[in-house]
Amino acid sequence: MTYLILKTLHILSMVLLFGTGLGSAFYKWMADRSGNVEHIAATNRQVVFADWLFTTPTVIFQPLSGLWLASLMGLSLTTPWILLSLALYILAGLCWLPVVWLQIRMKGIAADAASRNAPLPDIYWRMARQWFWLGVPAFIAMVLVVALMVFKHLSVAPLAMLLDYLGV
Image 1 (cartoon, one colour):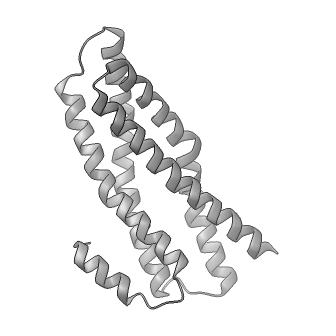
Image 2 (cartoon, rainbow, N blue to C red):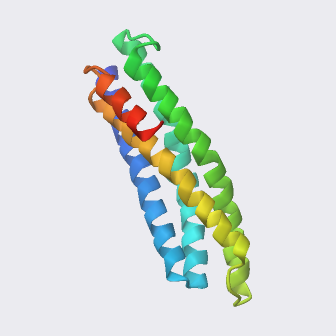
């Protein structure tokens, strides 16, 4: 019973992590494209809040529950799909940490510009580009982690070929 409950929580956590990340990225990107400083400020505020409320707890829970599941299944951390999943998760995390810092900075910059009824400065747009491009490898890595979770019993050779093709 422990295994099934943990597996359910692990999957729900993954859905929440993936959904919140993708949803936040989409709404922030669309707000930025609008050019409306008040809308951008409000969206940045909500994106940072969603990261603290949903993303951070799931980022912590995912590896803990995944490692616990592997232990319950009697799998070694050197099992190829687990090893690759952990490497991709670390890659996504290395992209996510600067994204969080950028989001917090952009939230402050946008709030300041909105309060002064001023346009966003160039530094905001440079940060927004960095934020976007850091999100690309993080998103790809998380898609691949989900694929590994689903297809764990299959050979990782097709995934290795995909990673090679993507230059990852």
